[in-house]
Image (tube, rainbow, N blue to C red):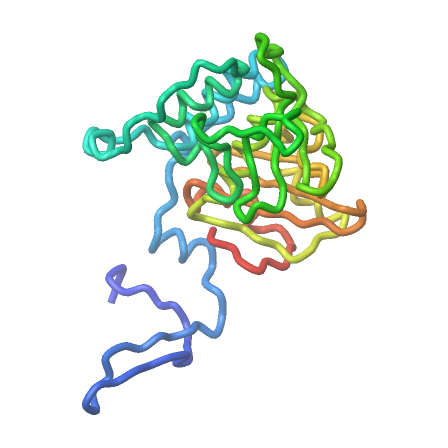
Length: 278
């Protein structure tokens, strides 16, 4: 039958349903995984140039505002004209002093609201609040309220690049290792991976397995994020992976990508995946 039909192997029925004695749908499970070549024939990969690039990395330890802008602009597509018309009006600006990094993120969020988070979140400017003691200004929190991020509250001009404090509501806050400029890059990388359409989720990893995975990626040159589970980030075009560990012996990893093609650097690694969308 030439190239009109592609042989996929043998399969078994995993689920089927019928109505009035007539089968209405049937789900088949292949007995053997498809080869990469077969997969690429039925779902062609994107050209490498169509994936978000890594030019932003060169600014991470220099012009971090440029790094944040380039990463967000590359990862999140610019809204179409109709999406812009349907979008909620921009959040009103307040007169209270805010660090430049937060101001920049709010400007980016006017056209790309997802940058404020899908798992955790940066609070809209009008919802910033002080803690119970009135000492810290809370600007971000976990989706279920388990923890928050804050800055030292002041009525004076804010620091150019202030310390970010991580806290639970009944514990003393702990300083994040990166100041606000680096924290916002890390927050954006974390949320980009969590909200991605294509995922690669391994089982818990050992240190040698982490080294195996990360050697095909580029490290983001920032100190660990998130005091609860110190987390580092690794990237490739269109891909963000976060790797964290509480004890330095077992590691959790999560990779998110803008397209399944971006997961190809991980495809041939001897890793046991819970989910692999590549």
